Length: 230
Image 1 (cartoon, rainbow, N blue to C red):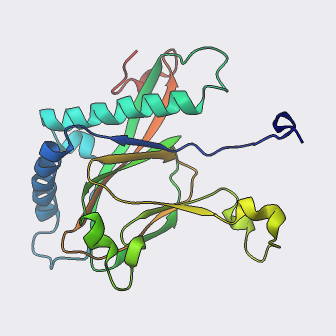
Image 2 (image 1 turned 180 degrees about the vertical axis):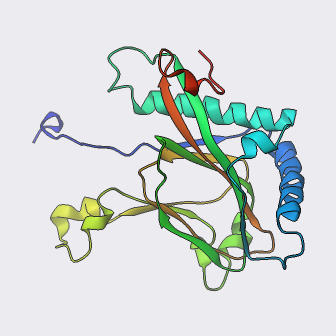
């Protein structure tokens, strides 16, 4: 059968970007996050998991923070344009991109974040601030290579339980993708895509930033002006 007779439908876009200033700005972020956590947890014993409120856009006012937000927005623009190039009738239009919530999470001691999706947005992102180096992270005697990865589940994953499997549907037999945590790496994904943070244990805490975003054409709703660039 000619390749032109085969339709590959409903792809799942995923964008991976690297922040050029990660080394210097991540170190600053760790100090800022530690201060915010201390303020929230005064008088409490340290926990293996901490998640901030999703109002970091308002709580952090630093030029380096604004540089990171600009990186998030620019990366979103590139990924969204590539993902929608067949859906848009013309070249990528000017976009209004609004970050709808930004928060950080700190985890260790084999803590994990179970399977979930994000609502009230079209795209989400996870940015790695700190984690053990690759060799040390993967050497964990129990968790191994899965230690601290973000696992994304394909849209057909829910249909695999008890399903018939043979050579004919071998393309279904890789129902998930593990993305390793790398400081300075941003992973962008559709908000409907099920994912989870696998258990992590290391000498360094696993520290990530997460956010949700909504995206409209430049002529859209005025409330979406935040961090827009036309």
